Image (cartoon, rainbow over the protein chains, first blue to last red):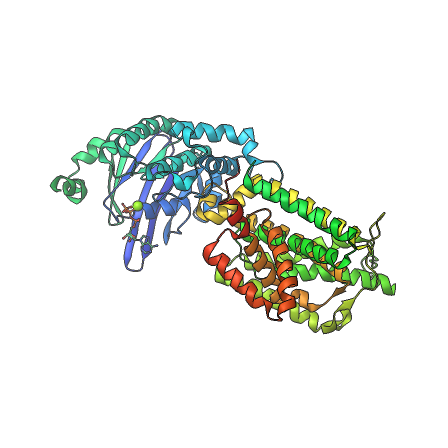
Length: 251
Length: 327
Ligand SMILES: Nc1ncnc2c1ncn2[C@@H]1O[C@H](COP(=O)(O)OP(=O)(O)OP(=O)(O)O)[C@@H](O)[C@H]1O
Ligand SMILES: [Mg+2]
């Protein structure tokens, strides 16, 4: 069995009396899409934040690429190769779409301490930036102000910025939310290929997408992982059916 | 050409032509007013890097203005008295040589900004405003109670410092020096705003989380910007002291910080020429209204209120519209 790139070991996190992560263990192996599903408020985003370094777990550890990164901040983890998209788009809204991806390319390549050369003429940054926009289908909007993008386009830009980082692991928090049927379908096709470049930990509410794409699925309910397995195993799991999938069938 | 570029060119042309007219018309006082405007503009350009591009609301830029001023005062007064400033670890004598004075002003105010920034950039929002204000007051009271360099009375320099090949006592020549420095710094700022550093700094102002997520630490970014910002305002302080041939603790007062911030906001925060237009406006108002009433600051306050409420982009925003993203 291949070694996991990302290994979350017994993480717990409480907000007051609320246990948002309850002894969560989870790993991500090369070449796979590992989907994390669960009802609203289950603690999916909270887990992503602890992996990306925005939140410190109360207990447990995050191992990335064979080392313990629990003490590192978001910046150090991003540099180590964690590429993350936010559930609520987090972009520089006054900048153009292209500037947002150039920022990502800069973070990954040259760093920000260049004071004189026009960054938007730097081919070494523009090329990967444009490529990322093309990959998500935003190339026509390169010069659009980010604040003028639709909700779905912002989600796509989130993914594009993560691409410019050439990360070793993608952490994606609901990248398809608000994309519409066609957009979702296109992104699904893209993620399907992307897993070869770097494995993806995918938080997603769209069950069709999850069951079609994921190599493994973990189900999080009230901060606890109640099952991990292939799509078929998860579908057949009675605990999952009653706790989560059942709810959807009733609705 | 963009409208803003056109406005910038007009402003620069006026800064060249008006003093030439005053020189021809033998109005040295007008040249001095223009010199004041140009030096204040330079101080504002410094603040604008922190405030406009970086989003750091510093209420302590008087510190850097004052440190630059005292760098000039101390160097020149030692040159007057022929006493070295210190002899250990190396002999450091006073000087009346402008380029050296500027260098010392830039280094010492940059260092002050580095230290103050390192301490205060760990906070944000109102706390950042208060802590920078507190540093300003610290320096103010320190210079008042420090007798070696005149204490409360300040320090006079009898002859303006020199620049090779020029007669700096001639108002138009000194004006030329100040304008040349402003033009060079504006050029450097226009490059910086479009550089990797400028893009990252501006992104950090808009969304700190985004910048961190691409692996760029915002603290070092802001500290660097704050340091450069302080150094530019410090250079302006040295020129200001040279213009007046006098330095006093007033340069460190919170009113000085406030005035710089006010005219930057009036002109247009974050715009390259915002501080220049603001400084010119400030000097014109001070000259025109100051003659009418001692309380001209009331009118200034009313104008500021108007800009903050109705014209967020300042005067340049009114004239040129919303800022267009570079390229
Ligand atoms: N900073 C916080 N302080 C207090 N409670 C929080 C905080 N962040 C999240 N929570 C709570 O923790 C629980 C888990 O939140 P989280 O955002 O991780 O859920 P989620 O699984 O991502 O839900 P959704 O599907 O709606 O995105 C929720 O009950 C939420 O209210
Ligand atoms: Mg969530």
